[in-house]
Image (cartoon, rainbow, N blue to C red; front, side, top):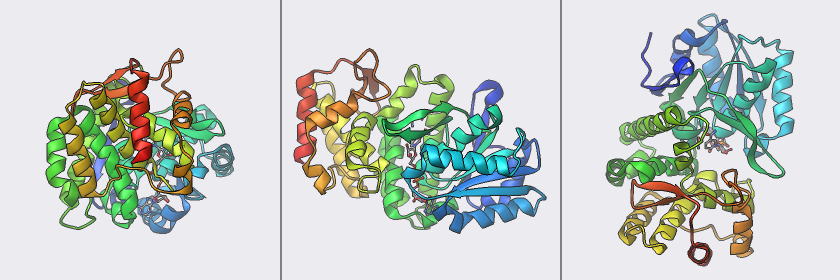
Length: 374
Ligand code: NAD
Ligand code: GLY
């Protein structure tokens, strides 16, 4: 049995994360320890299906594992009640049983949707994450948050349901568009900025290679994924249901989600791009509050510019209509609002994030207006 690179230590629900090349071809062996039945049902999207559904299905079938599948349209809009119903209907039509393993093959959209479906199918079935975007390999496939969006907002309906295994085949990232790779890199940077200053210094040296999409950069990219998954595994093991430290993973997200809501979810602003801009704003706000060195904000802007991460909003018709008031009203609907107060992830410097609801309104407005004017 191959030992996992990382374990998410959750007692009886502990699971392994494998990170490396050629893992789809080895899926049958890697899946074997967690399969209760030699049968799986794959959920994937229309882009990923063309690239990786056959390789994964064939490698499983060659080992005598029966494979069913359903394909949802690519894109954030598939995280909705209609696609959830379609996926559940397909699983039931295929006569999935409680012991059938559900497999999420794709990015965060597929992972969140398939994980949610698995958590409610027959009152709960097991699932495996096979993430194929960098964002999914470093963040969404680990930690068990599943869900869909509703007209009231993003990820507002869902469950905590941990996968039984995560299999991150880094070869799949070769076909990922550069813009999606960079959006995932924003989440890598997040782990460094929130709690690991040494990792940040390493990224300043190696981040450009990791995001170059070249063979030479592959080792650095794998190191980014391993370090990120270790950081996330530790946080999830300490606070699975986000009653404390896990909320630090939302660094940049309170701002980022507000921008995403205003830009829509059709590609003008990717989740990771919103997070990148949001992280610079969290540092900007911390600098304005006098708790973070301005030099750290400059290091972040320099690194983002060097790697191609955005530090300012895209210039579209939607950005022209943005106001601080609109952003504040989205932020007030954030899932992390408690007793009407927004909890922010702020920082005392690189690697030193903390949670607080105590933010001077004037400084917050200055940060918002400065982002809108940039
Ligand atoms: P995504 O799943 O939409 O994938 C991005 C695009 O890349 C899609 O068009 C997809 O078809 C395509 N794609 C995927 N793999 C590919 C590959 N290997 N080659 C070529 N194309 C490929 O987006 P994402 O950025 O992976 O995930 C974003 C989602 O993740 C959001 O819905 C967000 O809310 C969610 N998320 C969840 C968590 C969590 O903890 N559950 C954490 C962060 C983000
Ligand atoms: N992506 C945030 C979390 O998993 O908690």
